[in-house]
Length: 149
Image (tube, rainbow, N blue to C red):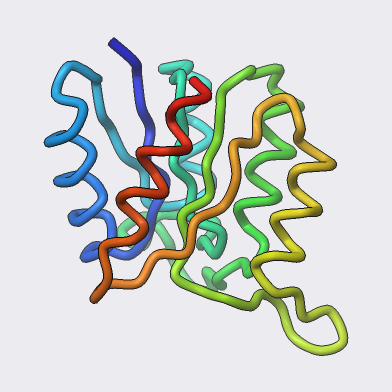
């Protein structure tokens, strides 16, 4: 049994990932958080074996946010840095519905970001997967990436 944490702010995407994962791996314990801060808190408390992480995240849960709560285009990378700072040796896979991140002149495509994350987080990073709501290829890619756990 693996403790799994999904950090995803989009309700529809979170539901689809949860349904798929729990159907494929019914023995695992699955939980979720919807923002960077709540995700880091959950990771510190539960010490999951796997984190499925969105790349673009808000700092705070929508329900808890008051005032300005911008989306962080590289929130997943910041999350990974905090995981290492907290000395959590948890495997992480990025599952994102964006193909590019940031804005010019700091625009990065998913492939380039994946290369950067592999270099910086080689001990915990399993890879990135492009999620598209009308396609199911992300499911096979997610299942394949879990072989490394």
